[in-house]
Image (cartoon, rainbow, N blue to C red):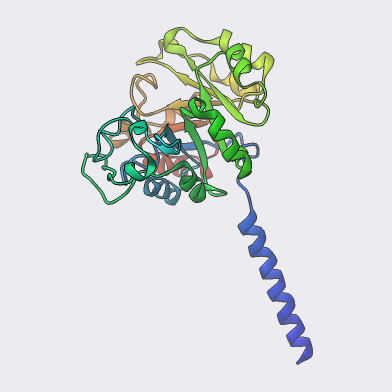
Length: 297
């Protein structure tokens, strides 16, 4: 009987340690495999819930999305909330700018779904979102540099800097002058507007001075501005393309998948390993079907 109880207690302790370790496990942008395609849900999964809502983030997590892109704004009483537009007119039942309202006041409005129909959901704060995402899914904070002095301390305190990706259009000199103090603590991805004749000069300036996480590249409506992404990948940086609309992805946009089951093949052939999509379900299904566990061959 004593031996049985000892064995039972030993098993209980092992299980407790296992599940405690699992609960404390942290996701890490540093450790995310470079040969795995990172799926990014634009404004979270807005087709199933209001954009930039807690539920849209949860829906993205359910589908197995790796990262959600969300947008920040500031209320009158200096609370960071999720909001894409300069006004709340399109996405809530209210009108005006986020800065016209305190958090308490903006909570009186309801979020609208993708068709503009009011729901019961409310505008979330950044803190509320981080409570949901921490340790579970990466975040791309769009427009975060507008509020960097507020965002950085929150992420630092929560030990979440390795879960969040920042992006911006600045060249290296401007980026370094504004954020040089923090640049080695954050993950940063410069946006290179190939369709506006930005290109290798901007890319190489970053490579020469700073270890970027990758580059977001906008292509325009056709492939006339396409560059060899393999050269970027060979230097250890990721290649991010937005599949949202034709003018961002040289015409290779999300809705093509509705009639062409191999529409995303172009991304893999062109060494793209971060895809921001408005159709996370279809993209993940394609990746699972064609390259086991999202891996690029």
